[in-house]
Image (cartoon, rainbow, N blue to C red):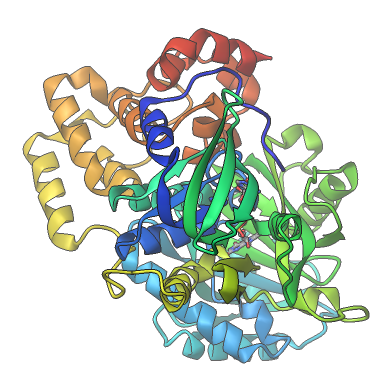
Length: 544
Ligand SMILES: Cc1cc2nc3c(=O)[nH]c(=O)nc-3n(C[C@H](O)[C@H](O)[C@H](O)COP(=O)(O)OP(=O)(O)OC[C@H]3O[C@@H](n4cnc5c(N)ncnc54)[C@H](O)[C@@H]3O)c2cc1C
């Protein structure tokens, strides 16, 4: 899944500054890979006072972490395989995320219908949901049993023929998208003094003969230039590529990854219900119809693969469309013409020993961290977005155990700014009547959106808009980004390539058809705000 090289030689000032500081630096920890595991590692270590650098050979969250189902969930389905400990851990993790990110990690109802012949009676599934609710400390709305009559009445989009009952329960989802959630941890690391660079690949690691530290060789994939730095410890957070890096330097581990491919298709909204519709697909596995802004995201699949470089095949697409058409009451069946965008990634599942003959779907989704203490090298296996705070906490204490100085091991390294700061922001926004400037096409007031996306950095937006009201105008007709936001993103979010914004800092290219984006009168202005001098070249590349 290595992203193509960026379309131009553009490198924004924040990235250039980071590259300058990384070259020849001596770090406490170099984190290789900025998916969710690497991003939380960097945020946690920087927040606790370590000198940390995090690099990704593609864009931040350009790997698996931008292809998930966008759910922060306790893993109700793992109850079936008896993974009580994992479910309890994920539920607690989800609750922590919900408390720490009230604007971003939101409770949502899962509306589940169960077909005739399902492997369990629907009442048992409901009892499972009740247990799940208790395991999540009853923090969310209680589950309820649904008769077929209720399903017909409350969700007419669910094809009720052959349905014998159902249930509704709560879990959480990431309001914006997974990759923005991940990026905000990278940004948090930088705000705490860490260094971060995208499109910077680790090409070599050498444990120096005097045993004092690692020497890393990195390639800037924008200019192709090589640089090096020293680090007292390394966190290998390269997701599905963990073994590749380990093998290149002779690190042996008990765990390894096996890979499971999953896809989602994004189509026009199939229902206005703000719920995740949940089904058991024709292969017996969970199948979701998830609200995604103005669209609907449908999936997923679970297919064993050997190679992490995957794409959506016709068979994958047909499977998702066939199940959606069978499970939903739609005015006309969905076809591949209805697909606006696709998502595809591999779940890196951590396994140890021989897994031959074990039921594929029952393999644990728990993360594992292995430490080579002699060489201060940590490898992260598996994991989920939901579990990310645990990964960050664990890595801090493991790095401290290696003897690296962590000045403030108990510092709070995650979470939105406190309610006092939010109240101050909202009061200032109200005083300048910001929400009256909300464009008619917007789905929510500007103040709410600004705070959720940018946290305390959103104060800058108020200054810019107060100085010039046209800064509150949307630039693209098809997406909700004001001029002021794009300037802020250009300053703070390392946009090297237009796709970094379109696909990862935002979900624009997932919810607006490519043809519509190409025709959007704001495309040139958006590019010039985000990637300055390279705008014309990048728009040409975007147009293909
Ligand atoms: C279809 C699907 C649905 C999912 N749904 C959910 C969900 O709803 N909720 C949930 O909690 N989890 C979900 N997951 C699981 C979750 O998305 C993954 O477990 C998680 O994103 C993996 O993160 P990671 O950091 O390990 O890997 P990645 O995100 O792949 O990050 C690894 C990074 O390392 C970089 N890298 C590799 N080699 C180098 C190198 N040499 N130098 C520098 N950088 C390098 C890569 O470019 C990449 O960005 C889902 C997964 C899939 C596939």
